[in-house]
Image (cartoon, rainbow, N blue to C red; front, side):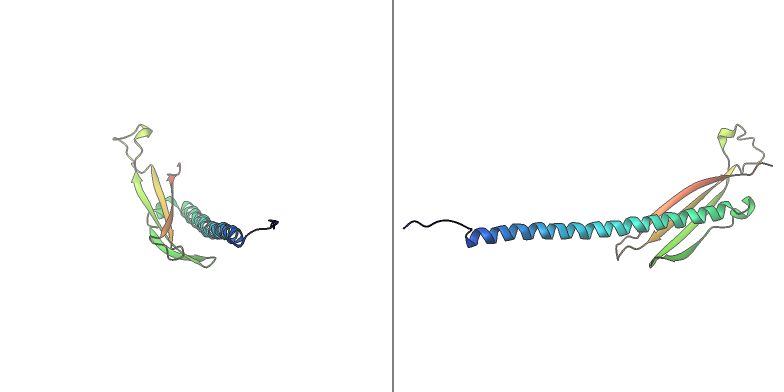
Length: 140
């Protein structure tokens, strides 16, 4: 008696299901990782916007008042708590202006640095974004 072999054996079916399951688990993990890194990217964007806002706030201050504006604050955006710190360095003499070292006014510009940190879903150390710019002394 000849058997007509149409169809799959149980072993072939189980192997095929196993490989499909591995592919599905891999895709699910990939989607999970993508969502996590999208959240990190979104929070980096928010942090950079908070840093830009603080830099603009400092740049709009008078040049003399800017020096005493070093500090920190906490900002919450979209359910994420950001810690923002800034420092303004003063009395920076630019030797490229051709007046150093006999420069009568060594206060040529100030550096403004803003650092924004936050914790991403329990990740340690905290993530951070840092922006630095310069503000030159206004012409008289």
